[in-house]
Length: 319
Image (cartoon, rainbow, N blue to C red; front, side):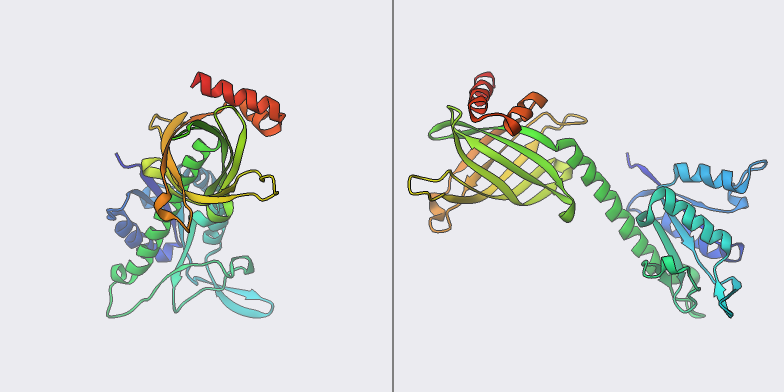
């Protein structure tokens, strides 16, 4: 069942036709299940015996997004110059909803050829626009703006789902690796990468006896949130040899987390080392993962090498 997305639309009384046409058009969208709420007495937004601000506060608690129709309904004198400005209560509602929902969930809408004078704090904030014409009806004129708003709503909702998935899988993990030489273990962590709105991975690789044989980190991670999968490119290096040279390695991998509700505790996947000079020698290694306990994370992060060695052997024995 699709989740209902609630969009609050505010306008001056002179522009209720724009608000209602916008409401009808968004409500007919097949992308999401929308509940559109134009702010007006006839739509029941404002209740008898309630103050105006009280009704708005209740609506803010329920709304996911807000659209503010800004039209030059008033004339204001600013520094000895008369300019056309939006109705003050609509600007107040814009600030109110920005404060509650955050700016990215509040969309300004105005006519392209009749832009009102806006407060300087709003200059540079992208707005949706429409083009009025005697030859084009209001619904058709609003179509491009509706599409733009729908696209942005979809993007924000997908970003939220992605952020929720990242928060569920971040933390410390164990990775049991099946190789021709035997079973090996990697201790790694998953953490958000805000710069790319994704995540990063970093870990240490041990042989079956708990000896450190390499360290690695992700270069780029692609997330399939709906399938609870990660695809990643990684790079790493083995400890220096007797000549002091560290062998650098790279490759690709994938992880799929269990589909239990809430925070996953285990998963599976695989990876391969890729030598650019010998692609044909690349071999796929199957892995299984499980979440590390807080004490395990503390040991692998701050513990001595001897303690890490003991813990790696214990985790492999108990797997």
